[in-house]
Length: 162
Image: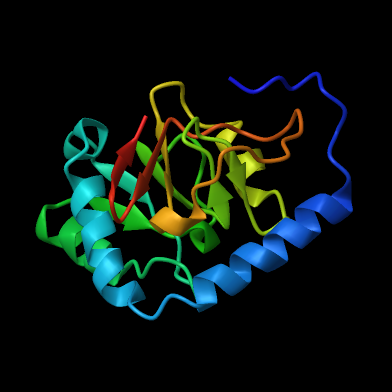
């Protein structure tokens, strides 16, 4: 668990890191194949296997492509919604969370808008948060603030990090 009593990181440190991680994501040429691998790991998770409802992000350039996960949801009778659908925090069993970087412990660097931190602070206690990224986006430490929500699990194209 990260010490949230430490001084808040300077905004420029997060900004610099965001820029570097966006560049790293853009440099990956095989995102489609790696996305397939990532979703194989996600759908094998016990919390996903029992989930009936999943909040799944709409892919933006550089992020894992969610199409195959959405196809899997439909094929297995699971309901999936995107954050843009104004979903009630009590609805999802699982929230799939993109990020620019994650730590193995579940700390996350997002785009900077705070939407996922606000949403995840209101979900049911039994709702699982799953951070997803490509393996190169996992770092040892991230600047965190008291409002940052830690993921329950992080999954990359190379496997599950708990």
